[in-house]
Image (cartoon, rainbow over all chains, first blue to last red; front, side, top):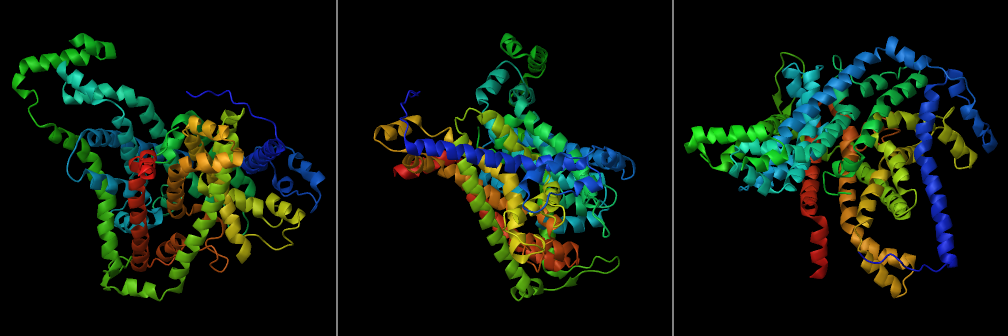
Length: 292
Length: 325
């Protein structure tokens, strides 16, 4: 490791840069957090309070944002009148189901792809990654026709299958990277000691378990946040949270209070999951190309 | 021998394994490993083929037909009509243009901001906590982000609308209903959600910039700017390349917030190609024409996929060897 004891002389340029960078950080912090804050605050406001704004140009009046009586009415209405409990369950089943299918089948395939050498392996891998990258709308056009004729539109299994189109290639691709990092010598040793190949595979699962866990969470996240598949393929019987939220927009009026509350309900669990797998997040979102 | 495996913690399997061999010694390494691995691979590959190759065949079939959704009617052969109609379809051409304009705007702002954030955050005292906070928008469903920004942009009670008015950028009217502003409003939403990802990727890259190079450069008298542009930035290129490819891909993979905020309007100002495709296929249900549009989008995806697999192999090593040549 190189020495870190570098003398940095104070110069006007350095001081100015430091000041500017602090200013920029504050700006970026506010820019990131403010919308979230407004969402949470508005979800607890009743209609009149939510529409309070200071006069144009009156920057001192920003306090209006916090000048309200908190009410949980929107949340109550969501779960009683709008049946968000059902949609929450649908979201959970669809995203968990697809994550389970993708990661269980995906980890086997990833292991095999990591250990096998055969002609056309590169082409197979390319096919897998391009499946993952295909635009959801484009995939949905033929998928909709197929699902319609087989009665899968509007059902949870259909939605699970639809989510699997992007989760399975994701799981295969990224878990292959994980298995690549486990030395084959471990399995060789196990097989010398009398394990079958399947037992040897099971043996190295604990080594990749944290990664597998993290990618189950990521698959859940992708499924949970999906809107396009859910709105077309899940429409009717398998409404998920994002679709139900979009349906709060009615021709006569948009029920902002409830939409913000639905936003909080949809977003908060995912943020916690995101924190949980913080270490794998960048790898997951860049398809394993960048590791922290 | 079994003791070795007991160390790893699965003694029982090991013992069972040994016994199996005693009973069937001829079965040891009976098959070549390739078949075994093939069987492991097969379920996933078959499932993936069923949900991606089979639809692709259907898609190609659909591009050549006039698809009828009503029961009892059968599809009509259309030859290359679906494609030839695209050639004269102005909205189709505009969709591509808008897609590229939208992506260029998103990417340039996101890369600029993201790199700036990463450089400032790198080795900052609050790096860990700030990165965690900046992560939050990425976890949000794009639909929810769309609604949130729609709320903020609202002409009567939106805080961002008020802010823009207060600093004198906007007089009145609506942001999302204005041909000029709508595009920027949507870009801002994308920037809000995804700049942190670029920052994280860049941060991971900055951690790999060789300290020795930076120090040597400083000893030679380079200032902070020179140091960034001549040492850090060249080391970052592979990371930025990945970031650009991934974000460009996502720009047309996810159109949720555009659908929510403007639906492609006003006057098609934000109708990027996937949004147009959505309208054609799932609003007008012209699935044959939709399939033809989808096909052109898939071609772009395949090109991007090729670029990505080349970069993915091992970006850092690849670029480094190229530089040394």
